[in-house]
Image 1: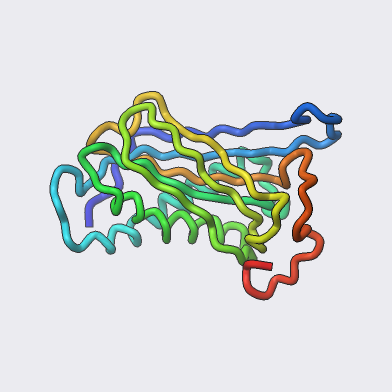
Image 2 (image 1 turned 90 degrees about the vertical axis):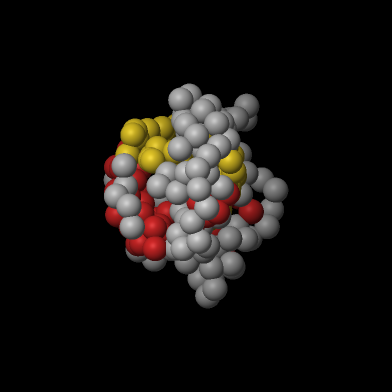
Length: 194
C-alpha cells in the first residue's frame, strides 16, 4: 500500500468552566487531533482499499498520543471519545470509512481498558468543511451525560486529493449535565453499552 503523506497536524483543546450555570473548580477538557494526508485513491476507483487501514494504524496511534499529551497526559482522566473523517472531492465516502479501525484501535489501545464503540462520522467536502464528531463515554455508550459532539475543521483542508482524519477525547460529561439516564458511576462494564 502507499506511504502515508502527512501535510499537516492540528491539535485543539478547550477548557470549559460553565455553560451559563455555576462555574466548576475543575474545567471539562475537550480536545481534537487532526491529520491531513494525501488520499492515495483520489480521482480513481480502486476495488481493494482495505489494506490501507493497517497502514493507517501508526498514524492513528501517533495522533492519539498527541491528543492525550495535549489533554494533560493522564489516561485515567479521559472519559469520552469519538472519531471522524472528511474526504476531499476527488475521493469517495468509503475512503473516509478507512479511519474506523485505525482511529478506534488507536484510542482503545492507548486508553487500555475502553469498552464502548468509538462513535464516528464522515463526509465528503472541500477546504474549510466542518464536521461534528459524536462523543460517548469510553466504557458505556448509554451514559447520557457524556453524549456530546466536537466540531472540527481546517481552513485549507481537505483539498480534493486529501483525507482529513480526526480523533476527539473529553475528560467528563457535559459541564451541566442533568437529563438523567445511566450515570458513569453505574456502569457495569459488561458489553460497552451499560
